[in-house]
Amino acid sequence: MRSGAAPRDWGGRLGAYAPVPFVGAASILVALIVFTPVLLASGPSPLALEAELVVYRTTGSASTEFYLHALGALVPYARLSIALGSNYTWNGQCPSSGLTWTPAQETDALELSVASALNPVVVNATAVYASGGSSTVYAAELAFEVLNVGAPDESLAVVACTAATPGVSTPGSLSVSELPHAWLLVDYGAGGPP
Image 1 (tube, rainbow, N blue to C red):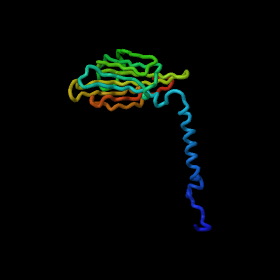
Image 2: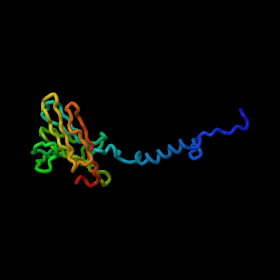
Image 3: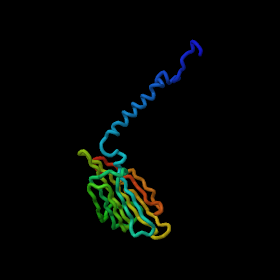
Image 4: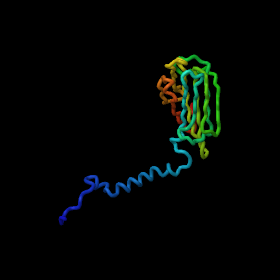
């Protein structure tokens, strides 16, 4: 052992501002400050509340299935609805008028599923989560057309209706073999879509 040796400089230049022994404790305190509200919050996490619309179909099937549920498996919604719009000619875009709507709805439910033989079809999906006197509305509207029905290259053309579903992108076309496919609904907060 050397006498008169200077103590080791554990932190270098950074050690003068953030001494190494205190960095670990500070990190734990920051984590507690950030995550304690999430850990103590009642009900599901905001991520689990997000609603998604899932589309599924098998090659040659007579119908296409649509499922509406939360990302979290155990999130009850105050209201779930899927309205299917028909009576239009597919042109690769969402129709702006003239649709005939067939609604399906559940209250106080975890999931809503609808099977439809309509082709093409517009799907308007809405999920309303209510807790503590406030509500959050999730919604989306997508148009679908099944192409090459029954053929090995059967596919699904998909278009997001931008007026009701801003910011949601679609692949344009999905092979039926790539299904199921899911889209997150738009979080409209308490107000709901325009």
